[in-house]
Length: 141
Image 1 (cartoon, rainbow, N blue to C red):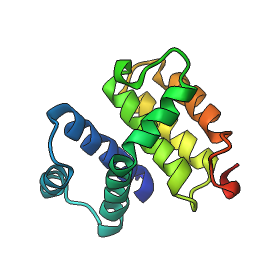
Image 2 (cartoon, helix red, strand yellow; image 1 turned 30 degrees about the vertical axis):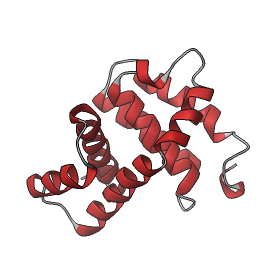
Image 3 (cartoon, one colour; image 1 turned 60 degrees about the horizontal axis):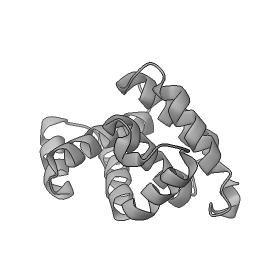
């Protein structure tokens, strides 16, 4: 059985994918997703926090990802990889209670599960660089 936060991250990536792909309103996609996926409230709450937080800070997150993804514009990345990077970057910057290693490991596992063969390495490389950024909260460095 999966841990609750791992499941929440999977849900969040799926919701972000739908929002970006359909160019739909986050709240509507979340509502529809929860109707189709019955889950515990704390898993739902964390997934929702990840989705809404990522979208709220999307401009800053994309700028950070772009600055550390040498020769890769986020718009050119596979949608799933881009959303995993976005969500993990949100976690690194704004979820101070989650250790860096946990965030990166979870993101790599998501990439391996949902994306292409080399996506885990790609995600790991970028997130490792971001995790050493000066702009991260002090307790994350």
